[in-house]
Image (cartoon, rainbow, N blue to C red; front, top):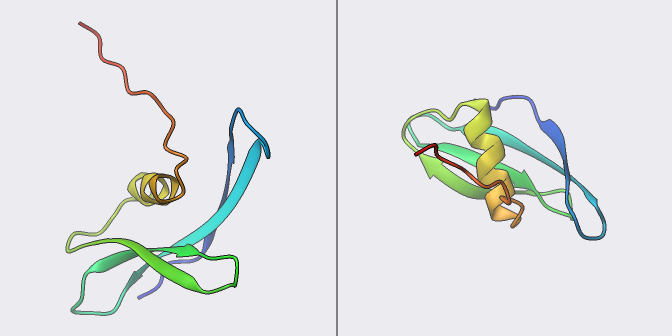
Length: 78
């Protein structure tokens, strides 16, 4: 099962300032769910996998982490 390919952009504070990336959520039953990131050559590379299905937010976070773009600071109220 392949979900539609999604395109994303992320603003960063250094050049090139906007990073575009694409990926997909893939599963070949009975195997695990895989987050696939589109490479410059057009092929998809598996960057994360698990038995439970990823939600869209988790897929996006995995792609950002793989590209070093997970710059969001998680805060906690005391």
